Image 1 (cartoon, rainbow, N blue to C red):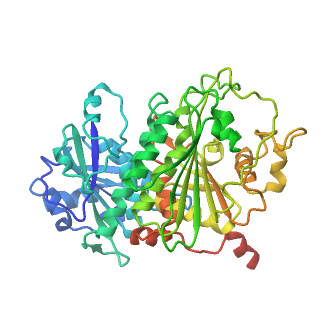
Image 2 (image 1 turned 180 degrees about the horizontal axis):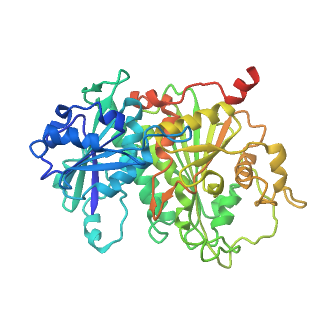
Image 3 (image 1 turned 90 degrees about the vertical axis):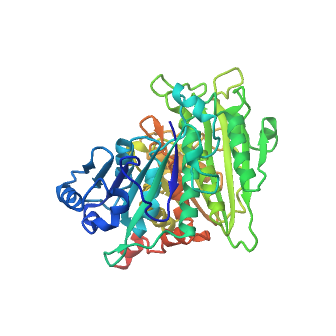
Length: 511
């Protein structure tokens, strides 16, 4: 059943018998609550005594929950600890609790009890629990009722009136720095930011979840055009033979065997008074068979997710512009289907070109999927960058957004020789896959900017966190919005944007 996610400024009044409620927080925060803080969500079904007893019964290991009124009112506690490589919001635990304990009825509420600095990450965690795409027969009719990114509360009308769609109201009780419950409602700025971010995350997850017969290059271009129309922007599209003619041989070579030709698509936001330029580049392989180096049967499933980088760029670009991005922002989508056929690229060791289309950008972020999961696990993306300062900032942004990152080795003088070729500029595969393969993959991308590139570039490998089980997570949207939050007009994003903390190596050298 399709679900709309709606953020409310403050706690609404509802009876859990008709509008179930799930209350989530860290145990130390739940212990600060008085029954009066939640009475509007629990009365008349839950008494103050029942609530106090329930809080006392919580013993998270790592999580715990207590029923307050049948299954209609539930209190859940998050893990007690979060290590330095985790997010203090416990975002992944929030998503799991919401998935497991919402009832999927016509209307219900999730109340998050958290510190203000974790407001954004906690909200994004709830959104990830409600993917849009489904091809179950019971959902097909409902899917046609309302074609949108799937987030209510943003002026599109009352979601309750939409046939076949449930509504989840997300509300907050915030804990201030003094350890008290802050009863002030969320501001319009905060609500706007949360709603647009939710749209971006759900759009990204929907694209990644869709199979190639429904999300091929044509469909992806259509999605970009729809976002551009919403933002009053017209994308530039280069595709088919024009790619080869204009020097984009890499994308052309990957996608030329497919029935639907490859494309390079660019969306540009150029506001007046912009001081900096940021380019977001996303890998959009809508399906990757491996080409003539065809993948084995165990490697083929899930290859629809190889467009996760481009999908994340689209969702982040949309939300960033909606949140008032103040600088030049380019979203570059490298779209192709890697198919097997008579026109497929041969493994012949030909020349790899060096396009220079991003030379005018001061900051380039490349989002791709290169399978660094062996090193960084299922929850962390891998980041490779030529800037130690921005490496530290990206790790901060990961913890503050819930889209976690871990650094991988940046050492081109020891790794780039893996691409050496006797007959071409460079090979497009790593000679020794035991020599920091994920780092080498990032350096392959960096080589097309040139190692003398004067700006900052960053490569994010998101192959594993782009999905959890069979479902896409919308990974990357919250990360990018947080990383560049200082470039937006959103006070919420500005408040969580990374600070210019001193990189670890500089502190070590000084000490």
